[in-house]
Amino acid sequence: MSGLSIQNISMRFDLPGGRSVQALRDVSIDLAQGELLSILGPSGCGKTTLLNILAGFLAPTEGTVLLDGRAVRGPGPERGMVFQQGALFEWMNVRRNVDFGPRMKAMPKAERDRVTDHLLDVVGLQDFKEKAVYELSGGMQQRVALARCLANDPEVILMDEPLGALDALTREKMQGLVLKLWKETGKTVILITHSVEEALLLGERLIVMAPRPGRIFKEYRLPFAERGVGADLREVKKSEGFAETREEILSMIWGMEEEIMGRTEGAA
Image 1 (cartoon, rainbow, N blue to C red):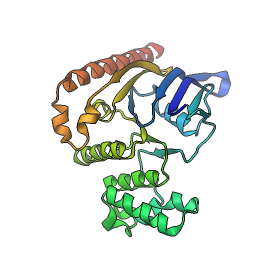
Image 2 (cartoon, one colour):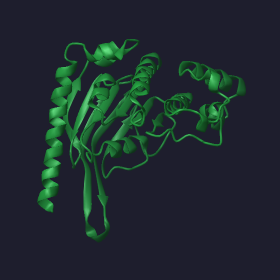
Image 3 (cartoon, helix red, strand yellow):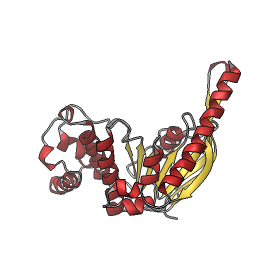
Image 4 (spheres, rainbow, N blue to C red):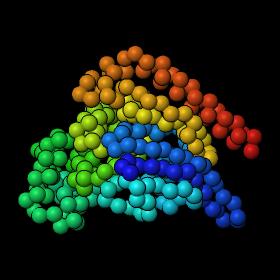
């Protein structure tokens, strides 16, 4: 069985004093190889918890994650993670950051150099390969993080709000790059974002999660990611159905946020 299968995942965090927080409840998603999924929802709905379970950083309280029929029981090279901040090695230059994974796998130098040079070309950083990462802008650092992830040739790329800290213009350029890499590599991509527009642009499938306990509230299948590959994303935002779907999801999430605020005020 190929692809990623998330089967009835629940996650409870036990707290001091016998208290607990139910972060996720009965989340199930099946993704075929090469699908692009965006996940959004109000704060505290368990998006990052779910991504950390998929990465193998957390073990769920209940349920199973299968990748190609094999249970996920911890981190592994078949799943790559791109964080909100690049989590790069500050003491290494760009090239050494990108080829870190292949070096750890003892890939022959000639092949390692070929892979690294190709990826630096793809993300537009060939002229910066000898630069220290602290000399780069935020957008360039995220491109290094993407290239480093791809250098390990993972089957699944997990992205936790990877563009959230970027300015609007850089963010749009990076969104275009994510779509380009998705289409060219055929990787399965799961992206968490707080931006409804970004979720619409970068998800051929989009899941809206409800607040705690986190669970799937609604799923969409969308044409905008496919339309956005190699296109002007501002034009995609003007295309049929984009604005209507954005407003529908915004209203949905605003309603959830108001419900959360009502609970908080009631508890006070």
